[in-house]
Image (cartoon, rainbow, N blue to C red):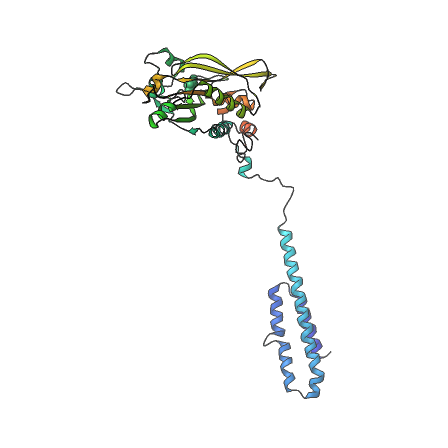
Length: 360
Ligand code: DAH
C-alpha cells in the first residue's frame, strides 16, 4: 500500500471514530490544518518535477477532497446524533394533567359579581358610585336619618355598638347603607344621583340572615324627581338584573323614618321545586325598601326641602344574588369554602357588561 493510501486509511478511520464535534475538529486540524499531514504533502508538490507533479498532484488532491468530504459527512452525522439525543431527553408526556393558570382556577365571589352587575346597570342610567365607612357614628346612621333619639325604630336594627367614649357617644357598625346618603348630601350639592353598595351589620344569624351582609342604596335628589321615576328605575333595574323581558312589581305602603311616603317592593315570581322564576307565577318576594326622602333628612343634610326633593331605596345584595343564582343558604356566602366558590363563583375574565351579558 502506498504511503498516501495508508495515510488516507488512518485519517478516514480517525474520522469515523471521532465521537463528538471537538474530536472531529482535532482530526481535521491534524490532516488539513496548516501543519496537517495532507497540507505537508501538498507542500511537496512545489519541489517536484513537472512529470512527478502530474502523477502525484491528482493523488494528493484526490486525497484532500475525499478527506474533506468524509469530515463534512461525519460532522452532519454527529449533529444529527446530538439533536436526536436532545429530543429523546426532552420528551413531553402528553398524558400528564395540565396545570391550569390562576386566571382559570381563581373565582370571583358571587357578591362581587353581583355588585359589578348592578353597578353596570345603574352606571348605564347615569348613577355614580359613592362609598362610606363600615364604622359609623350614631348621628349618621340614625339621627340625621330622622330616627329621633330613643325612637323604637332604632331597636329594629339590632345594632353592634362600640364601647361608649368618655363623652358618652358611641360608634357603631353601620346597620344599613343609608348613612352614605347623609355623607353624599353633606359633601355635594344637588343634583345627586348615586348608588352606594357596601357591607352592613346587624346582630342576627339564621338561614337568611348573617351578622354581616350587603346592601345597595340609591339616592336621587334634584328639583322634580318623583315616585314615577323611582318606579321606572326599579323596573328597568329588575329586568336588566334578572335578565328577563318583564317583571311585575308591587309597591306596598311601609314605614321608614327617612322616607315619606315609604314603600316596600315585591317582585312577582313562581316558586317551583326549590327554584324561583321571575316574570311569571303567583308568588311575591320582597326585595327592597324605598320612598321619597323625608324633608327632615334633607334639612339635616344641609339641603333646602322647599327647593329640592328626591327618592331613595335600599336593597339587599345578598338577597338578590341568592334569587338570581339559586343559592338557598346565605351563610354559605361567608364560609370561605373553596368548593362552594368553585361551584358558584365566576371566572375572573368574564366581566359583566350590559352589552356582553351580565352573567354570561
Ligand atoms: N335602610 C333600609 C334598611 O336597611 C332600607 C331602605 C329603605 C333604604 C328605604 C332606603 C329607603 O334608602 O328609602 O332596612
